[in-house]
Image 1 (spheres, rainbow, N blue to C red):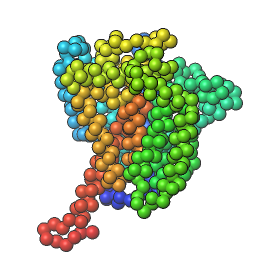
Image 2 (image 1 turned 90 degrees about the horizontal axis):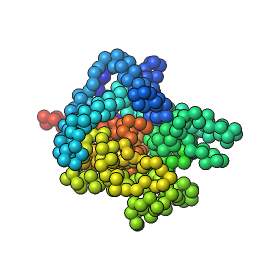
Image 3 (image 1 turned 90 degrees about the vertical axis):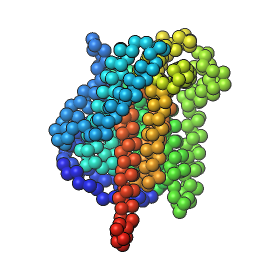
Image 4 (image 1 turned 60 degrees about the vertical axis):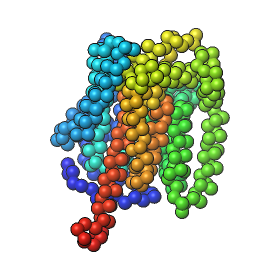
Length: 452
């Protein structure tokens, strides 16, 4: 595949259509297969050796085939990331030895998780390379995959409304049955996982509506699937995309659009706050903020789990002078500190023992100040891309998705979390390369006249 240098992309307020990947049908299938793994978290198989994640097997097969197609090994950036994560994680393990102990075991366990994370990033990156190293073409393929699974989820809801049968009810986890309707999850573990995987796509369509008043059938279907998931993180993510778009994506000459957008946004927020499952989480969260984490503060286990995991992560950060237990080892932190918190009588355990219920809390507990730097750097990558104006809509959508991941999604290896993280660095790299290319065309060299 050709790797010739692309001309700089002109920063424009709106690019009506995304670039189409000029690849064979087989290569397009590989790209979409890699991206589809974000929606397949419900396909894990329980074996005698523990859960077997089918998504990892799919990515492994896809990665091998993509390497054969690209005839390239790991890019230098991925290799560098591996060594940086190993150094930071191992330093954290050694410093926190007095608190958590089991140094050798933690070094091994953390190393395995770093290998898995870097492998998944490399698999997504190889799909990006196969798409011609074009962010637009790569994201367009993601939108196609998201649309397919959005349709799957809506079909799940429609069949339930007619027959009262959940077509994916044979999975041990999945949709939430509200009696008259489902909180859909398609083939994801739960509605929140499903909404998280759909969120970059849903946010993209929201941003297009807010900044360009563009509505598409694919956008309606994707946003509808997020709404039918009844996941609060999906709802908040869509609102976050609209807010970020208003703050950064509406040009001065198009401010008149706000007279149409703001009433719609206000009505959407009002409708969201009227939903029972949103009110339950909101009221419990406010109560937890007021009186602290006790099992009697509310009926919503998600709010209580978030409060407990927040207290655990910050206590660990304080006790260990800003260091963590090691990458991927939140369970070690949880087991060390959870003894100080009660479990509600209607639960056998608290959620978040392995994920912290939040990417922010998990990174804080696992890597401490290094985790804060990684998260801050990721956010700055999105901000850089938005300010550069190159693929602004994609950058805003991914920033909205990442903000929700920081808040309420502590999984590293599911729901396309690492896809969103990779997009941050791809978007920043493209923005920097484009700025340099444009500057090179405008700045005279050796006394010659301006070029371009």
